Length: 136
Image 1: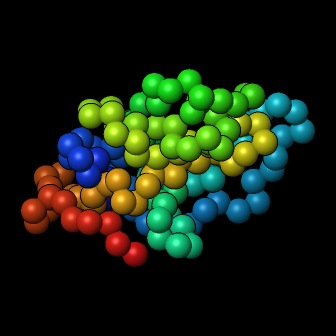
Image 2 (image 1 turned 45 degrees about the horizontal axis):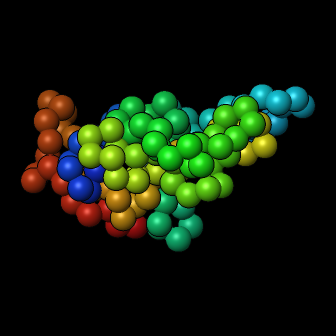
């Protein structure tokens, strides 16, 4: 299992996650409602150009909403169109964009360059040195 941490302060940003694929066949509601998450809980997917790590929004408890109100705009949720809107809860550096509006997908896109990847052992302790750069 993997935990993604802030590259600046090493605070854990995610729950333990494993590689997965985006969910298919999600029905878009007919009214102003948020769609189901694009990723199953506990999974992540590296996007096509390896710059983003796509996760279920519930798997990113170490991030907080951006302090700039222009970054957190949206109708029914967060549009995610105005730059990163999640920051590290420890040091405040921009780490991700959350989309959760009625017209967008429902996901968190971690910026791969803003995180490190720590592997978990069966005992729940960090494996190896605890962190490595995220690569695809």
